[in-house]
Image: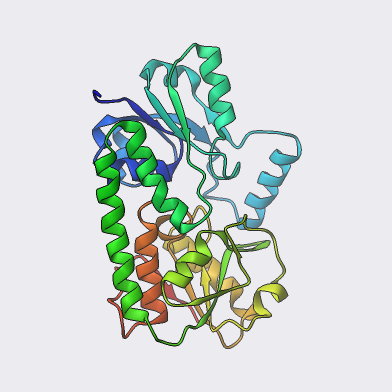
Length: 297
């Protein structure tokens, strides 16, 4: 099979493509694809959306709910730009309408444009699903060996963490994925806690994250609270972590680079496991790199 022209419609897929060594084949990305930095600066942006940097978490939540209530779209597909790229394969998702453009929108646009690109929807719910998606992309591009190699490297790192924390006490860990209103963690996030040597509480493993009350998050008596807001890196996570301190007296509260290490289902989730392990078992694993985590209480 010859080289394929790839378009990624979600940041995690962009990271997967680069981790597989296929960055040169990627021709289109979204406005949110910020890792690696070259992705957005050297590729055509085919999906846009509202800039929410100046909005508070509550304002963002209100905006999302209002759009959903009227059947509005949070993302805009630049169909003409997509058609001009003549892609062979488009990577998208149906997991979360808040996170990226659903695959159905892409299918409709391709039919309207007369494009013949294949569409691969990546919809992992667990950490194992995420790891499997790397091989899925590699197979679709015709380089299955690259998928096996990437997965093996990441599984080796997870095994090292597992060995380092084996037999140690497991702190109870609550994850706050959004602060106003509060959302607990779902999908693969509880798996990250388990892999890092913790006991996830107040979460929904393998299921969508949902709005909860602060009482529901604090009731299990977590030893550690991780604030990992979707759409934010460490600086934004620190600001939001400050606001949760009154709800968890006595718990250690940490902010984490949510977008980089926790909420995007890409290869850097393994970085997230290593960073969380450094929080929970600092005497057993290496320190997290600068910009990954910060304790606020």
